[in-house]
Length: 97
Image (tube, rainbow, N blue to C red; front, side, top):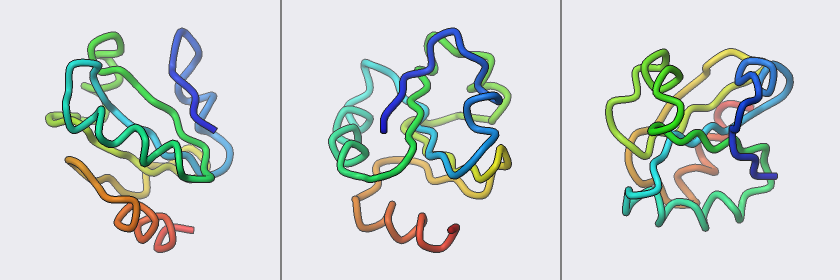
């Protein structure tokens, strides 16, 4: 399930379960390449646009996009920076669950 962060409370969304958070921008080429890969995953995915949610990007130290953060019960467990293949993402997920 892919969800786009609008005005909801970020911490409320990710507080339960396993979440993949994709920090992206609409103008970012590698971000556009990553989207179809994320759609193939059977995971909770939250997409956060860094241009409209600058406060979250700052809070999590997002300096490059795409950055994927992996949360379990609200706690940041891992992050990857830059384009990732489906296999790389699945390997990261397997190591965290």
